[in-house]
Image 1 (cartoon, rainbow, N blue to C red):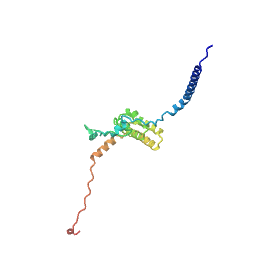
Image 2 (cartoon, rainbow, N blue to C red; image 1 turned 120 degrees about the vertical axis):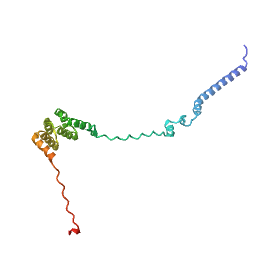
Image 3 (cartoon, rainbow, N blue to C red; image 1 turned 180 degrees about the vertical axis):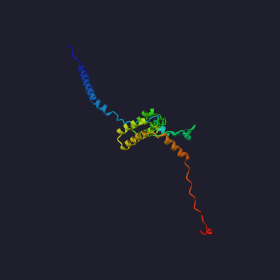
Image 4 (cartoon, one colour; image 1 turned 30 degrees about the horizontal axis):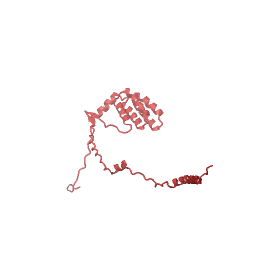
Length: 212
């Protein structure tokens, strides 16, 4: 039987020792790797806002020179309204919140037509006291007896005693009998024949020469 050489076992022991040593070194490297990775993470400074390349619109508009608005043209001069047009009185237009109602009442009153009584009487119950007073005056100018009945009806509905008296007085006036023709002619003749009274005579002036 051949005798084994002592070199072979020695080599095997060396290889086994190197293998064990390498295994332990690898384990140490694996344990130290996470800690080293955490320790080597760089700490970055807080981020600063990026500087805009284009300035905001407000800054641009604030620095821009102000543009002056064109001056408004002066108002046209007011042309005075003629009060008489072709021999007819042309009153100025009414103003205010009730201008339309007052103008309508005036237009109806100057027709002197009894058929316009219902249109005028409709303004007797208006919310504005100014319009109601103008309606009473309009019916009086119209001069139709037919307006007495709506005037009394409005007096019964109003809560203002002074307005009720004005309505009843207007109704009574419209129901007055007309003046006889003979009396009208006498009044007309009296106006035409009336002579002005003489002016009072001045007292006579006296002087020292007259012995006064």
